[in-house]
Amino acid sequence: MNTRHVTSLVAAGAAIVMLLSGCGSTGTSNSSNASDSNIISVYGSEPAHPLFPGNTTEAGGGKVVDQLFAGLVTYDAKGGIHNEVADSITSSDNATHYVIKLKSGWKFTDGTPVTAHSFVNAWNYTANSANKQASASFFSTIEGYDDLQKPDVDPKATLSGLTVVDDNTIDVKLSQPDSAFPVKAGSHAYMPLPESAFKDPKKFGQHPVSNGPYKFVSWQHNHSIEMVKNPDYKGNRVAKNDGLNFKIYTSPDSAYADLRGGNLDFTNTIPDTALTSFQSDKSLKAYNDPGGNTLTFTIPEWLEHFGQNEEGNLRRQAISMSIDRKTVAEKIFHGTATPAVDFLAAPISAYSKELKGNEVLKYNPSKAKELWAKANAISPWSGEFGIAYNADGTAKNWVEAICNYIKNTLDIDAKSIPMSTSDEFLSNVDSGKMTSAYRSGWGPDYPSADNYLVQLYDSSSADGKGGNSGNYKSPEFDAMMDKALSAPSTEEADKYYQQGEEILLQDLPAIPLWNQNATAASTSAVSGVEFDYGGGPVFTALTKK
Image (cartoon, rainbow, N blue to C red; front, side):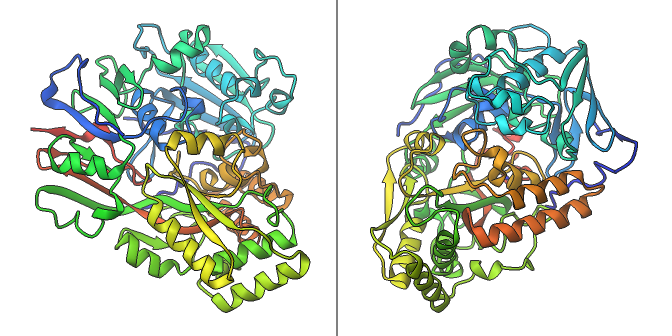
């Protein structure tokens, strides 16, 4: 997490109406309020942050938050947009003004109502830099956002573009056209929060009160996160099971062993050691479908020799052309990944194999040596080149493989740098403390090129305000993204997104490697395995005998 593009969501003109059609250790379950017979145990990793939707940008927490919260809209398996809490989203003034109408009757798991204030208060909290929420940049096009990014901002300051008209109506004024706004509205950043979240944020992050398909039960750190079906949920994703138990592991191999031993029901993280055999293992059900995840590694601009300048760009291009993506995909991923040709995934409409400059993503050792020599003429190379990764994931083999390619092609000392847990790794990434390159990647929050490009490489997403962890800043790229957001159609927007990608192919703020399939395995008792538009599992669809 198949065509994932959004068509006809935005058109230029005086009035645009958006009528969205609605409809480690192994954990053990010991506190569920439903029958264990249909509680599904699934692979999980320790969330990097407390469970605030606006501060959740990684898979460990993301999978949990997705099940607990419901936003304005949801996305179907083909990337279609459907109303959830929203009754309608109406746009005018060339996508700079939106009016959101909410459905009545929604409530949080503490019994309090979900109202316009629930959304607006949550958005203001996330956008205000004093609250240090990782998804602040999702609100960068709303009026007043820049004021909330000032160093001395009042923690209670709010977005001037947001107005609560009544309990069921939100008025949104933007500082620039943003055709992707209705699409973003179903992402983590836009989820509503109850009043209790602001009264005691520390307590809430450990024991969230939500409005989604499931109700939170417990979080035993580094052990399990349990939730049960929410009987008051009124949306599109009604659970077919009685609850979920996210068992937290520090090794995908341990989870896979538990799966084969009947101590885990489902995993969507197949370890490298099982990629050649999981589809033929008759003791399991295996799944391998196209997906929307991208796999990259980031070389932050603050590293010596890798500034955002000619030397840095030459070195990034040389390193990229040192890697034989096709061979690594065959030898390590065994048919579950394909070499990247751009910064997007195939299900996204702007995806293209024909971008100018994409030769930097092709294996060309002689050209790589030439570019490295040009960089050395600017400033001679010294030191070693490292790529950090979390050892509790599945990156070890491919990181070591590309380090070998870089070492052998460029004749430099290149090595992998394991960090013990996702929590440690992501804490260093989020705080800008990485002293080497590091593995990166993306599973989409919403089905648009905007999510892969603006949220990862626009200047508004840098400096801890979003997913631009390498702090890449290019006015030229930013301007192209603004044109895309102002475009009158998806087709027109895609042209600007692709022109923006051609800038990225020169600068390589991250180096695209592979697009990953949606792979998973379950016990024979589990049925209902489905994948969303980005290749992520639809946990609400899981059930077992």
